Structures are given as structure tokens and as C-alpha cells.
Length: 228
Image (cartoon, rainbow, N blue to C red):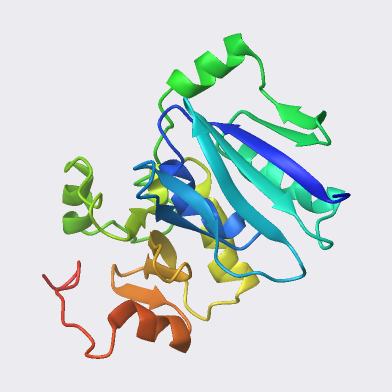
């Protein structure tokens, strides 16, 4: 097939770290846990413009995906590579068994990149705005390792670069009338972003369709980070 690519991604600690920045992908993706391999993988959330993205296999810590369809262009492949570069994930793209592009794809650099700890940005916006402070309950959660591991939520600050990405998307691209500081994202809806305002109040940015997916038919009642 003319527009068929194989994408290989090296991730010693898994693809979980991509969750906070998944909206930056040029292909609409979601993070799902594969029962077959017991790891989180990238899965296409909606098929548009004749683009098909599929997980193929996991070999060691090399995740292999296929990207095909008449809507696949070299520009799209390059944009997806830029998405992976946000977290410095080594990757290689093959087209007809020929290397189309690669990033940090050699043994020495790959070992260094995959062994390093990704710097977090849990308190990224502290002191950047007058009178803004992260609520104490939010700060307390950062001391609890993997406190969101069994949920569909990820802290945006868990990956370097994600905080600014979502801040720009909400406040500039989506033109929020209120200054919002993003701190978490929900993977089940793939678009629900939770933010603080300058006073520490919590806001959920989500469209009506995904809000119903998020809360279910009967809704829910929960304590907020600000009111306890």
C-alpha cells in the first residue's frame, strides 16, 4: 500500500507518560489498557479523513504501530513525530521497509533517554500569576505515589511541557473568558480537562456530549479540591 507506514516507539517505562499531552497528537488518539499485553497503548479514538492507526505488537519495550489510508500524508507522519518528540521518545518510521525518519534511534542514546526521569511540572504555574496558589489538597496528592493509577485521570504536570501546551490551548486557542490553569485530564472522554481559576476554584472544560460520558446517566456527587 502506497500510504502505509510502520511506527516503532521505544518506551522502557511504557506509553503512560503520553496521556497528559495526548490532545497534541495530530491523529485523534486515546490511551487504553490492553488486556492482551497488560500495558497501556495508543488507540485511535475516531477515524476521519481515511486515516487508520493501529497497535501491532510490543517487542521488549518497543511499541509497534501501523499508520495507513489514503488520508495519510508525509506531513501527518512528520507531525506525529513532533508529538513524540515532546517527551523525547526515541522512534523510527518505516515506509516499504525503508527508514522514512528517525529520532534518537541508536543504542547509546536510547538507553540514556529511556533511563532518565521525566521532570514533572506539578507546580508549574506557581508564582507566575499574582495571588495564585495551588490548593493544599492538590499539593498533598503529589506526595501519594500513583494515587491516580486506578482511575481514568492523569495529572498534566506529570510530563514536562504538557502544562504550557494545555494552558495555551484553553486560554488562547479556545479563548477562555476566565484565566484557567490546567492540572488534570480524563482519558475516558479524551477531552475533559480540569483546571483551577486564579482563586483555586475547580472548573471542568468539556463539551456536553463528553460530559454525559464522564458522569454517566445518574450523574455523580464528589467533593472538590477546594471545598473538601
